[in-house]
Image (tube, rainbow over all chains, first blue to last red):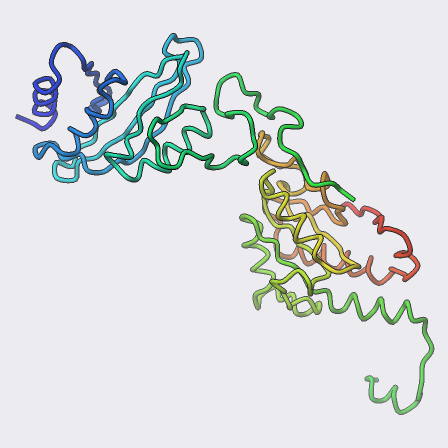
Length: 163
Length: 170
């Protein structure tokens, strides 16, 4: 049995009742989980000895603009022991832009989540240090949201005076 | 006929203080290397032996603004960085000059975006806008020579008021 099959079996066994949706594109496996079990799921990915997804390669988000679940948080994880990748997606509600942090699972998620917060305004609950990453602290917008204009909001970023 | 021969003939020369101070200043322009992104690599090449900015008396790249006359802003200036650039500029003693090196610095360049200042002349008085992405090292030397020309023409009375430099565009 190849690793992808094993992975599907182990995961559906651990999270039964159709909580996970698998999809595959160009041999890459993606699993969509609800945000209630997102952290629990990630912790299982890392700690289970058969899977051992110890490395968080990337964590980002997608703004779908018109969908009901407006944002999707995407985590790319890598298992060194099995040299396999997995994408974990968790939809985020459009009323309450928040999801639990996975810094408790992968420490490196700290800065990734800060960046996602800066760019999309998604709040990561229980994050140890949720400050802006790139934009100035006093900036009031989230630039990668679809409604944000490319050239920014005039006057939102003050320049020094030209004397 | 070299300088020594001239010195043997004439014991003195006459000039104006403005002219000799201008000559001294333009022959020793000390740059502030404000290297922010890839233009800084070309600026380093200017410092190296092939292009050799020392030929123009400007090899002394000072990393403290207090000893600089010329700020070479080499790279993309974001809104977040603009405060830093301005703070360093403000620490340089008068008289001082600014080269906006490259497309990003002059106009925002290809970064037509919310985070990049669309031309540093929005918060700094710029003397030279240098074209190129990045400009070749010889182009930067050309800009330095134009600045030298400008400095040579500077008179003390130009600084009675707040400095309002004329803008030379290449």
